[in-house]
Amino acid sequence: MALKQNEFIEFIKERKSVRSFIYKKITKEVILEIIEAGRWAPSGKNSQPWRVCIVIHPTVKRMLSELTKYGGIIEDAYVDLVIFLDLERAYERTKDLQAIGAFIQNILLGVHAQEELGAVWIGEILNRKEEVNQIFKLPLEKFELMGVVAIGMMDEAREKARKEPRERRPVDEFIDWF
Figure 1 (spheres, rainbow, N blue to C red):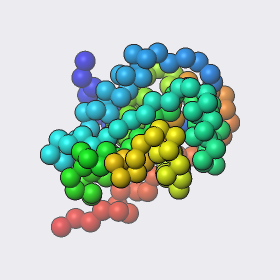
Figure 2: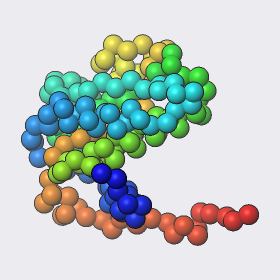
Figure 3: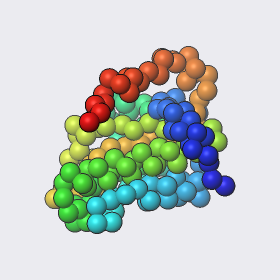
């Protein structure tokens, strides 16, 4: 079932960063469906330079949480996707970084497509990327941390309570016509 153009644009506009979760299991099938959305992101020469560590275990979540000021979000999420740039699959830095951004955005949209789920992309943990690599025993020369996507069942009440207005710059503010 294809979305009409205006429905698709509205779907994108409705996606938001969710930081409040209630504990409820997300099935392996749903997690894989979300990652499948990411898998179809474009990448230069179809290199697909991503590596994902799927974290559900509380001990590993705690270890990650201690490396960021957003640790509470990581621990409250049912699953955390720790996303790395696979440097052995990479071929040109700018294009590889763009591919990872598209991969993460596709994952966020994949989460948004699921009933009652929400997610947030945590980048602040990059300040401790060496320690994150150590948790997963991934060599720094082969894998570079790109971020964590925390995913869980949305806590609607807490999300509504912290509801800041979602604003975007007007299009005319950042475009030029030639």
